[in-house]
Image 1: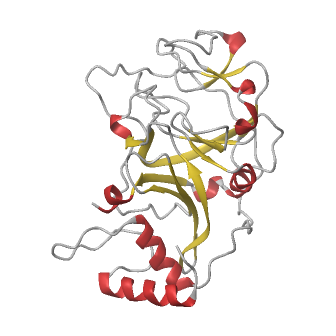
Image 2 (image 1 turned 180 degrees about the vertical axis):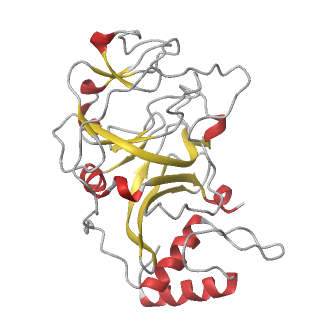
Image 3 (image 1 turned 120 degrees about the vertical axis):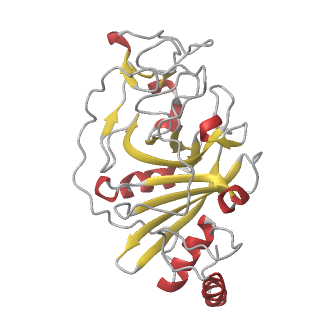
Amino acid sequence: MRAGAGAMHDLRRECAYSGVHPGWGALPKRGRMRRITIALSAACALASLGPVVPASGTPAPDARPATAAAPVAPATVTPATFAPAVPGAHRFDGTIPFRVRQVLVVSATSWRSTTGKVSLYTRTATGWRRVVTWPARLGYGGLVVGTRRVQSTGTTPAGSYAITTSFGRKANPGAHLPFTRVGSDHWWVEDRRSAYYNQMRLGRLGGFARTTHGYNGSEHLSTMGAQYDYVAVIDFNRPRPVIGRGAGIFLHSFGSGLTAGCVAIRHDHMLNTLRWLSPPAYPRILIGEDDWLAA
């Protein structure tokens, strides 16, 4: 998305042509008009607001101090026999709840794309403002609609999800989300037989197979390298997970290659994002392929 004066003029013209109000809310329907894409919605808002904040900028969040994440209770496990609804998996329908004041948009050009871009937006008194856009890596299996995702396919789930907690191998860098500094006993449970599926858990508490290998292996968080220095948890398939739909979908730093279903950005970008995310702003992440988002 360009920020030059010519681009701004084009965006305003596009907004006027489509009849879209420069802001994200319930979208009007006129005849056969397709619903606005996320990119155009944001672009219209941006056009009405003026220049974009430079990529190096990090807005000061209006957040309260972080606290350690509270202990979680065992999950109520739902068998995936008849593919019931996946918690947190919602397709973006053109509506952003009014209380949401921070949105991350992850977009890719095709379902098979393994790279894309992430754009950060904040709601101001006059509309949505794009803060920055960065390159992103996706799952090695591309994208899939979140309600149809299957564990171990390497796909990134498309949809709209909350971001409510964070963790990292390093000390809290100034995150406003609840932050847990992980040590040698912290795991993310992906054991399909466990009542703690898709939760962080200390290994000494048991309730899952403490192994990173095999069909029921989990993630040993402290061994994941610099990509897990700073992590925001994407609330896909939680807090009442459907076994087999997937666990451990995060926004984290670049590793050595593509992800296993997460969204990854550069290390310094992840640090800035974690400092930006604010619980009172009810941040959400929207993930999707361009045409699907526009359908």
